[in-house]
Each structure stands twice: as structure tokens, then as C-alpha cells.
Image (cartoon, rainbow, N blue to C red; front, side, top):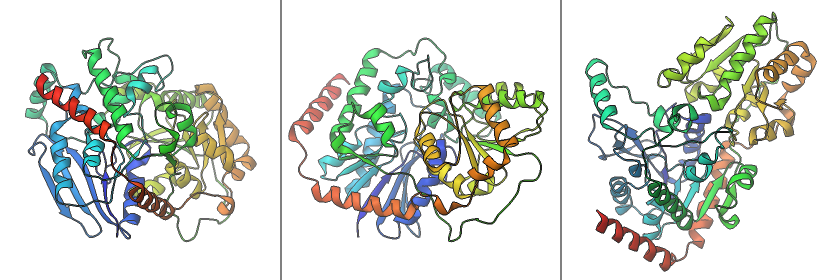
Length: 466
């Protein structure tokens, strides 16, 4: 039986993640644990537990290793080169022989992990499910939002934030969800300052560490071949890229009974409440619809507490009484939330590579309205299950909503039975990954000594500088 280590950026039960990624991981773990010996390692934000201590618990189906990290690091460098996290990772590897390691995300970890694994002769698979690893190369070029750049520096601690944090802790109980660290730092809204306070040489060092990750990882998993061709082909060799569409847990029987919607069509939005998600344009679209006499409801599911600064401004823009905010959706309640509406709207202004939410929505016979030029749009286009926006603008969204409200025949076609719907089952994902780990472990030869020598030389210089 294969022995595997999964490295996650947060608990698979956590709702604080974009695109319901943790929901997908949680279902995948349940499937994988039936066929492999699985250890799941992730950090939790805490200012009460001893930082970088490790808690290992044997659960019924897998083993869980949790380390506690501060809600903010003292320096930007610690977000990618963290010796204390390296020590925790080394400790986990010391007493166990893993056949393969799958790093699902390096957020809240250290870029040294792949090199440490290769020193022990363990093959490494790394998922590119977000832009974190290559944020210098991608986000600073304005991919996150047109005509803008993103500096991932606002989660660095300072004397001012430390003082405010201590002051708040006196009057308010601790509430650390990790939302801001995991999602908010990518948003241009939270990066409005012109000066980052970080030397260019630090960004150069981070970019060099990202290149080392590419060198020491055996395979990189992408959810979208389109995304790889658009953004990552110059950064990751084609020989290391593998592709897998996110599956979902298929029920034994799809909901295929005929139906007819009574009253106005209901719409919903499920994602992070950030400008890059197109949420402002969506709200403005429903303001337009209300002014034109439309009674359609919009149900918005997303974090409203930890990003209260933006949420409060957004809520002030709402003039339609039929717009409702419900807060975040827990993974196990995803389909229940989807069934509060007839149409799912995903007006993202960045490249969405996930299909987990879309596949669940189609399986629940929901029509879709999605933005163009991403993996989600390709899925909707191929399956014929909804409308694709030519631009993320209030008028364009309002017109799409009116089209589905007035043309019920077209709407019902998008919501037709699922006999022709082709999507992988999450058990198929598990089988694909087990084959990938087995093949990678079999082909895993000796690590290039020049690469390891280069890394050791860099570490020696770091100690001297320290």
C-alpha cells in the first residue's frame, strides 16, 4: 500500500478557501484513504498555541499532522523561506517512509519542502491551483485585475499592526480563520498602497526560490490545460505538467425529474466577496434590473466577516431589496445552498481554473452565467449549460439575467436532464492520482547533485549572512 503525504494550506474542513477547493480536497481524501496510507499535513493560525509546535492525530481513515503558525509573520521572507516550517516538515519525514509527497499548496509553508524531500529521495507532485508560487511573475503583471498590479505584502507584521492587534485582543475574543492570509492578500483592493516596504532583492530571492521548486518537483498538476498554456508554459517544462479535471462525488441517481419554475427565476453567487470576483458588477446589474421592474432574487454566499472592510462598502451599493447575503457555505452544504436558486452566476474577472463548483451545479441541474476566457467558460461552452458573458459589466450581466427570465425554453434547455453530462467522478480523480504517484515513484532516480550542491551553497551563504 502506498504511503502518501498531502501538504495543504489549511484544514480540509475549513470554509475559508477560494472556489471550494477545500471541499474538493475533503472529498478526495475520503476516496484516497480507502486505498493508501495517508498523512495530511497543514498549518492552523493561532496566537494561543505554541507557534510551530506539531500535533499528530490518528483519525479513522487517515493521520493528521497540524502545526500552529502566527496569524502574521514578522517579515515577508518568512512566507516563502521559513526555517521553522522546514524543521516541522523534516520532523514529519524523519520517522516515516513516504512513497510520494503531494504539495497541494505552498501557501503558509516553505519553498524548501521539495528540496528537503529530494534529499531523502522522495518524489514530489505539486498542484498549481492558484497563483501563489509564481505571484511575482503573474500577479505583478496585472493578471489578477486588468490595469493593476498586486503586491503580496500586506500580511507582513509591523509595530503598528502588532499594537492594534494587542489592543483588539483585550476587548475582543480571538477569531482566526485565515481568510485574509489565504485569499484577501491576492485582491488589489487590499493592496492599494504604492510602496510595499520590501526591498526588490527580496522579491528576486523569492523568484529564485520558486525556480528551485520547479527544479525539485517531479510533476506539476494542473486543473486546466488552457491555464497552463496561457500562463505557465514558460515557467514549467511540458514534461513535468499533468492535467486532471476536478471531479465531484456523483450520486447514484441524478435528479432527472421534469420541473417548471413558478414565479421569477432565482440566481445565486458563490465565491469570495472580492472585486476580482465581479461581485460589484453583479450587484450593480441587479440594481439595474430592479429599476426596470424585474423581481429576480440574488442570493450571495461568501465570507462577510473577515473581509468586512470591502463587504460594508459593497453593501452600501445595494439598492435592490431582493439581494440577500448569506455568509460562507460549508463544504457539506454546497448542494443544499445551490438548490436555493435556479441559476449560478460566476462573473470572475480573473482566470478560473476550477470545475468542482460548476460540475456540482450542473449535476444539480442549475443553469450558469459565467465570464469568458477561462476554464469554467470552456466547460459551459462544451456542455451547453448556460450563457457566457462577453464582458464583466453590469449591463451585460443584467441582459443575461433578463434573457434567462424571459426565454424559459432556453433556460430549461440549460437545466435539462444530466444524461449527456460528462464529468469525472472524484473516485476517478483518486485512481488517476494513485497511478501518478506510483509512476512517479518508480521513475524517481537520483536527484541532480548539481541542484543539491547549489541549494547547499545558498543555505551556507544564508547562515553567513545571518
